[in-house]
Length: 271
Image (cartoon, rainbow, N blue to C red; front, side, top):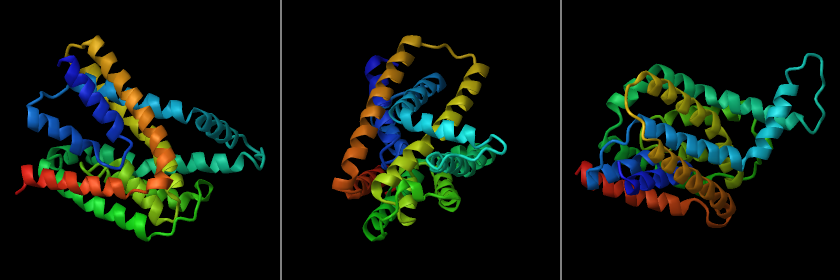
């Protein structure tokens, strides 16, 4: 793999990981159009570490507050200060929301990758979930804030996130859609989606590290560092810009983009 391919794939991964436009739909196109080889497991690990580092760094203050409140909630007989209770509840809700995707990935991840990681599936899910996102953004009442997310809402968003194991769905897109359908504002739904990505990306990265340790493939450390760095920068800037602009521009630009992308994929792989 040369440097241009590595940077291009890293930028695509970093940007599409957090925008509601489906990373799998974008990563399939370069391989098809340009005949690029599979980047390999080690490079996948590097990209995951880059995007994970970006979201952790962006939300570092929130994570410290959530972790501190969550640890305090374990102390027997201790009554949490009123300021810490929402943070502790948020931390627990993120853990609850992570369970469905973890279970589905553990028991059915290989089957999904074997039977559903197909261009025609990605094309249809890119189109179908674009329509659902557009409907949610246009029709749902956006009046609830991040602090209003309880265990019921967390479980429903978590179940939606599990659907993102089907390629083309978009993890951020489906969790944003679920958040909007539960009445969250765009910014609240986006922040919850980004925070919820941390345990999911971390778990996927650890699984890849285990698989990499069992493989005998050679590692190009320079290329891995280049990919991780590009993924970190693009993911961080993506999160920062998206949260600043989402309330102003809404989600319809991404809906229209997904419809166009889905149309291209349908033309290339289905029709």
